[in-house]
Length: 479
Image 1 (cartoon, rainbow, N blue to C red):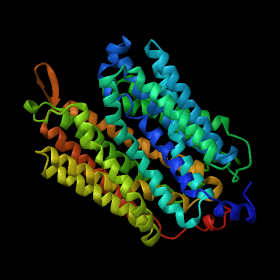
Image 2 (image 1 turned 90 degrees about the vertical axis):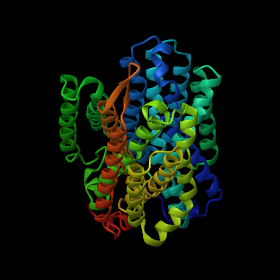
Image 3 (image 1 turned 90 degrees about the horizontal axis):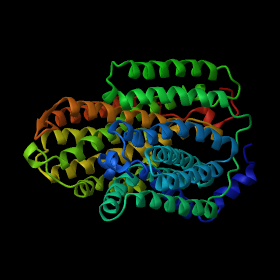
Image 4 (image 1 turned 135 degrees about the vertical axis):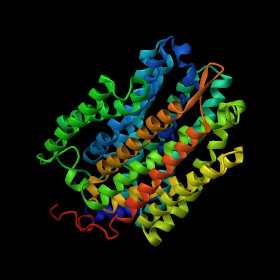
């Protein structure tokens, strides 16, 4: 049920709006941190867990799959039952998952724990939707930009923190730390974030949720494990084609429901559809750097790299996230002045410049640092613009589900980048001392892929409609 005028005025005048933004941003930092939590121990997992490398790959894959599946579903649940309530549920899953992983002696418990940790990714789109509900309109754009920046900052800061912990302590401490972080954020949300008053009436679409989960799992398994299984292997084809078939049936089913999990008619509006497609390209462009730059920095000097340790490499990569955070207030002001579409165009252009620079200059460590700073500018602008474009184009009762869907499209982009860039680096490699290492040409190809994805994002952004959708200003209009 939508709030009446008195409720809306009460919300926009409520105190502690800065505290609301701060708490939601901390929640976003905690969620993005989960993706880099195990990076320092990833290569050691077979030894630590007594399992094969193929099995331990699920420690990362489980988080990716859970994030992709839970995020759009959590968005819909937030619209229906209250966004703060679902944020608390996701944070509780983070705590439970962290404890399970911390106390588990074997790989099964760690995989289960990591899957539950991945569910917390849904707090970012839900947090952005809460901001639309409770903040004064003059603060919304800057707050969204700040919240969006946490997607990069959490991972950038989390990697060196995880590296320091694993170098100085037992690896289980990583999971105890994430459990403690989850408890702190849970308490802050209970204390600071007001209960949601914007609700969508109706029943939850359990069949639609199951269909979306099965379809996404199949597609993402094919993308994330294709390198290892073989792109033409029966397992990859069965997962990929089967997932696509399930999603097609799911879409047909959703269009025939009066109360669907995701309103695909809203998702098909030009501004929403084009923004989501651009999100795939921007997500790809971001993760292409996350895969290629650290490997180049850590590669031995004799093999054409820089021979840095994991901690040293993460400190070179980290400033990109800090740039995103520093730029967030400027992104909000710029969006209010020129509109989020131009902000997305500028972000894509910065990514093109970053990868173009890397194609020309990649012979010194400071070259990689400069490129990462430019990546931070591009992702900072792009990630800030996309939720603004979405929320200008959907009714208030659809913000949770729509932002969750946008986050899903970003995940598709990052997953595809991890698979494709990883395949390029593996295919274009030479053997040195019994170890396959990527060649300089492999990194050049990865940078070219980054430019291509950013160029696609730029082209799509130019066609996003500038004018607001009338349904945003008059949600009661028929779709």
